[in-house]
Image (cartoon, rainbow, N blue to C red; front, top):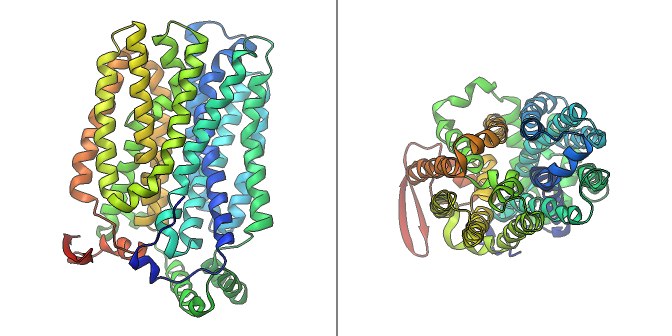
Length: 480
């Protein structure tokens, strides 16, 4: 992936140890890949899992699928809250190790009992919720400003990679499905493997605590050593002074009740509504329930359901590699506006096609859902994750990500009942309306980040004065 720098980025502190920075990117990808994998692996596993759990009634299957899917993001929301308390006692790195340790208990989802699976899907949610919050803070702390614009997108890259892997695992069900198949247990064991890989990578290749936390713990020499290992010698002092200022700010960090103060209100609302759109724009319902959607549309044809679901994951994975080009040309504001607009149109088309059952219409719906995931992978998925820590401090990030998992829990619990009650037509009409609302909001409140450093973009939302910048020789004026 391209790491082409703008002129502003070239003026920021230089990095001497780029392989170490890439190891941080790998940790980010592993964490978010786990989030993505857990979203999709259940969609093709459901029938075989229920066969082995002796759950055959359609109403019981709908109930347990809703519970097993929905209890995971509920656990994630609790995990964010847990992470908010634990980070006051542990460093970011230690919190990630703890999250990975908790995640190992997800192996107990291999027990063929629906109540046990639900309980330990909740525990898996605890681990991934804590990870999603701490990773955002760790990224903002450790990532060199020079590369923040590009590296902040790695969270989205990991998600789409996880989506694809979760759906590819469904290939096993073509030959190993139904009662007696053990393939579902292999599929369910993958999150524990990813947790193990991440902690191992942190220990072996990126065993760094956040410098500002070390400074506040009185470990100044350790903090400076980390900075010296990553940054060019001529920039070490400048970076160290930046971390000293961050450490001082954290000492004076206000309570979470201050997040709705005027200076940080708009960035917080941007984060919450962006994550709401990420969940309720239509794409996540496809990721969670693609197999169930195609099962209804294809009249229970397993091969069509499997191949169509897998193609959706692959399309999203391939699409993400074009994001660096779009980001350089369009910036966050226009990527979000264009992405939401296109997804809204695709939601409307899927809603219109939903009342038809002919094979040609099924294939057309499949194409629309693929395009939906392609656009999502190029816009809403990575950019919404990136702007949360970019625009907000630790407290506002905490609130935003808690809301995000709550939105996801509501979606995955409600969607099977929405599909049964108002159908795919009604469900995707609601998704289209949510995108329309977000487009209107983003047009007025999300500013262009091109030509700005991460710190400048952060400060842009905290100045009630006109902010001017020069880009390509043209002076642009924006009102913060």
